Length: 147
Length: 182
Image 1 (cartoon, rainbow over the protein chains, first blue to last red):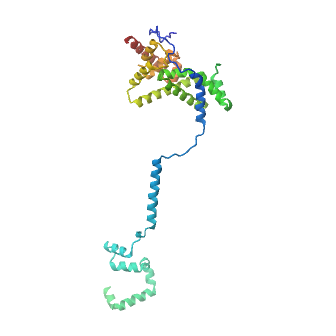
Image 2 (cartoon, rainbow over the protein chains, first blue to last red; image 1 turned 60 degrees about the horizontal axis):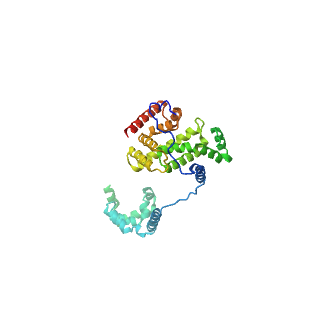
Image 3 (tube, each protein chain N blue to C red; image 1 turned 45 degrees about the vertical axis):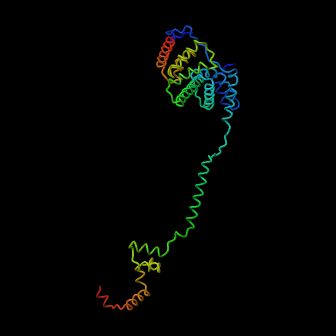
């Protein structure tokens, strides 16, 4: 049947029949094929995490290295510095002089609690200062002259 | 086979007990027209079979949400047309060859296709159609072979009726020139 739109073209001899064929029984089987595919798609698929061997190997190597480094870090005694190393470093850096470093190392409690108020209120410490001045031969007048 | 209305199919599909039966009816009612619509676009039977299965799988998944703004058959044609366009685009990308070469390849395949039962004139017409751009091929096939109304084509292709008429006119001219030239 010629339509209005096709009338301008001479389709005489041009068949409208469908020239394509299908394998025998194709349309008979097709509904069953679709039903099967839908059935397969409706099945609940188990969610299993599959990792590639290369990924597993990389993860194992990472865990081994992390384990070894962690063990060495927490057990290595070389992380602790000796008193000599501390004093050499502080002296070389000019933070305090050598004598002060030795005093600090020998009496860390004093150094850490060198609060002047506490120090002045201690009678014992006053006595020690006086004794020290006497031993050094420093008179009261010398101190007054210095001031 | 008894023809069922869209309403009947949708009502059956909504009931879990008759869901599969409803879908089977829908497949039986539309499989042939949809198959040949796809086949004219992709030429090869195996490709057409794959795409037709995709169409019905998509339809099954979306049928619950189908609004009766349109007929089921125009909705299915829309899905099928989109499947064809996507397939042809991916084929062009896969072969990294210009658009015209894919159509040339399809025309070559037609000559050796064991499931092409047309005579020499029908072969010539199909080869002429394959020289058309994708959209014009769709319009020509739907109008000439399936005698679809422009209003329905407009719904399927998302193009205005005027543009479809112009597209068909250009397609006819090109086919005419191709046949006269050879």
